[in-house]
Length: 479
Image 1 (cartoon, rainbow, N blue to C red):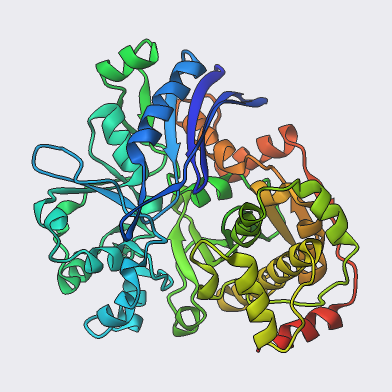
Image 2: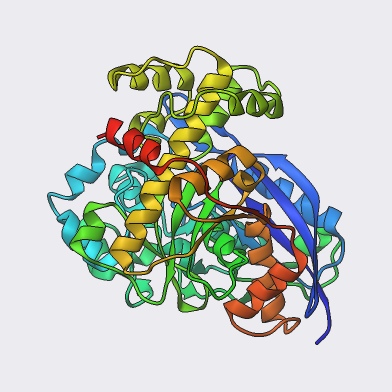
């Protein structure tokens, strides 16, 4: 097998990157060649993504990467672009934090009961799921004119290649996919009043979608043919590929703006208990299922830092270590924390409603957030085991949260399990590994890919310590 050089376009909810990787049987080197902001744009009463700016930044990143053997794209889920009959974009994609979906889920569930929807799609109820976005958009001129709907990574891939495809891991987050069949749920679409002709043919991770178009080659300076390879285009799907698990059963926390907490399964769990606990069955690479629940994640901390003028986080974390443990905690997944703005005030108000003193300083607020996240991680890991029947021996924390030693230590203490932190770049690594395997540079199943991760990436292990009774008491405060 010959080493390959591939580019991963990795788009998060606050920034995007183009990463360059050299991959072979014993090699996995990753370098960031471009980084660019990705924030919401409010126009009138609506919150949008600036997807054209993202596309321009991607072209610049590919130009900076130089000649590559393939490209793969991953991004956040659920949001989409609508194209008219000529292929023109009908406005910027609406941001999932926009308020247009408020109350829509309850309205749709009068037509499709939540239990019936879950039995087919296996997706937890989140107000911004694509199905609720489309119900909210019913009757609008844009949706009436639409002939194609492409999720964000598929839309960008379409602009790079001209191909119209929908990658299955991201499609599984929409609430419009039959998770057992790994195919679009035409009956759900019909009952929701959604035109199934909007949706592109599905592809699995590892499939070659198409080659970069001539005008893209000209703009980036690349020499063709350069294929666009389908990866786990939902960033969490790629991040789970990037979990460096050995043979022991594991839980994962893909920790960034969101914490996606769950276990990897061979088949979906479509029980009523799972639905009531709001667990999601999202599809993964190699026929796997990501059985998980969304926890609000480092969004709470990011919003406080933005509110405070972006002070030095490392100094705040050093001070937060010295704050009293579990002095104040909140339910990190409470929908009241979903919208941007005024986060510290909302956390303080939540503390007071729970009969706790609000954090009196910035370090105390940081400690409250991290204790609350660790508590949410604990609760979700335990419920994932109970509902799936899969006991775990270790928790892997990947993504940006793996840098936060205090959060990782608190998560180990809260869960009563060892935490292995890293790699930070799990999403990009999962992206490039799927590309490299498709090109024949590496071989084997997910276990083989993860062996290469363990051999090449820096990992930190945290053993659990502390008093489990204190975490139990903190949990009781939230009930």
